[in-house]
Length: 161
Image (cartoon, rainbow, N blue to C red; front, side, top):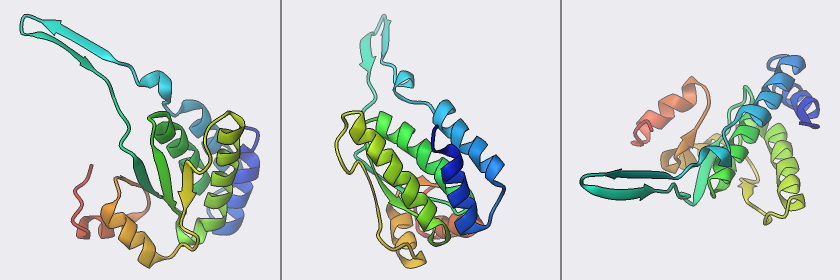
């Protein structure tokens, strides 16, 4: 929350998209409204056929492609939702928004470590380009971005999830 405006300013500066005030609101909303561990409830079902306990488990490392339109808010959202579920995140920033995405990731990693979490729960490619994005896109589960990325997603053979 304390870096919402700072990150919004970087996102606007590197992409030229939107207004800092709106991006600040998006960053704050991502921090305050994204479902976290409180939403990962166990379920117990019982009936004539027996009983079952449903517990949600992590998927492992999730590849997360970031858009250029709101690169910091999505990093915040993905960090809360994916890390709360016990996953690590491999971030592939949009080339135009790489600086903003990596700055948000750096601040979140510092907060994770400060809270007692392990290092490197969030990592990223060192140089974002469309070739790398396309390779990651073909294999990843979490995708966000504009029409061009959606088109590449469907051509990659990965079904919409």
